[in-house]
Amino acid sequence: MSYSFEKSSSESPQPHDESGQGAWASVWLFVWDFLKVFLLALAIIIPIRFYLFQPFIVTGLSMQPNFHDGEYLIIDEISYRLTQPKRGDVAVIRSPADNSQFFIKRIIGLPGETVEISGGKVVIINTEHPRGTILTEDYIPSAAATFGSLKIQLSTDQFYVLGDNRLASSDSRSFGPINRSKIIGRVLLRAFPLNKFATFSAPNYAY
Image (cartoon, rainbow, N blue to C red):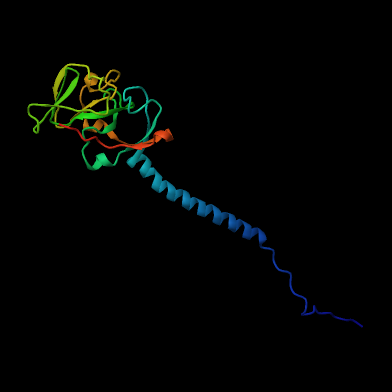
């Protein structure tokens, strides 16, 4: 006599193990979320870093006592895309002799003006002051005379720049006026050292 057996319906089938696939899905989801955040950060940071604001480290003594060697500055590039540089702005410029070198200088003479240096003073001659007016520069020590003797007419695309440390600065007195295309941006703030954090704007000159 033969017997046949059937599996009882009470026995449930063994489930398929998908724990490995679930772990990989979680990993890929994490990676994808990270990539989205990373790409979004690049989309924001790169334009800011290369087209709006630039870091700059002061090198040398030419802007003392207002800016010292090793200080970390943030340069605003966007303002000069919209407006002309102002007298008194502290700006980063390309060296007239070498585009790979950068200087930090103060803008003194504007396009179309005549700049005269005589007797340790800077005189500005323009349509507002056809006889000339001595530039009052409260940001430099009173003993820091502007050495030199010259008188120069600026073209419609030229600026005259000087370092605040007039006794130790290579500036327009040596390399001449600079073209507008050489001006990169203005100093917006000093970020380091932290105890000297400050923002900057053009001074109000008394004529």
